[in-house]
Amino acid sequence: MTLSRGEIVVARLNPNQGQEIGKLRPVIILTQTRLIEAGSPVIFVVPLSTQYRPELGAFRVEIPARDHLLKTSFALLEQARAIDKSRIDVQVLSHLSPAELQQIETKLSLMLGLHAHFAN
Image (cartoon, rainbow, N blue to C red):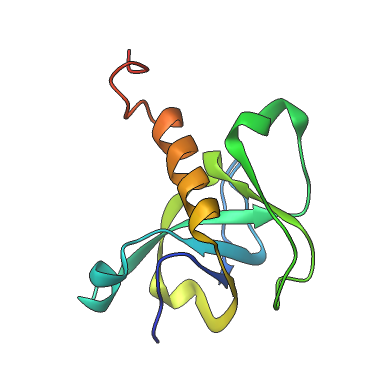
């Protein structure tokens, strides 16, 4: 299975616990391609949903429908997590643009307090 950073693929996120998002759904691969190629057994992903919650808008990035991603979706940054490669379907639905990937990186960085001027 060849996977690359910025690809949108389908993953099986069940079983989930509590408020974790589950089901079979599109996810964005954020793990560096070199790490995947080196044999990392887990992949860091951001799940997508077609549902938009305005109160969590700061943690969402809109991904317009294209290729095999049939509906406009939203990257759920607060649901980002590592999953085993075996949860990922081989079919690639689409790829993020460099601008979309940058927007996700920026919002994740702010959310995690990785910028010194935002850290507690």
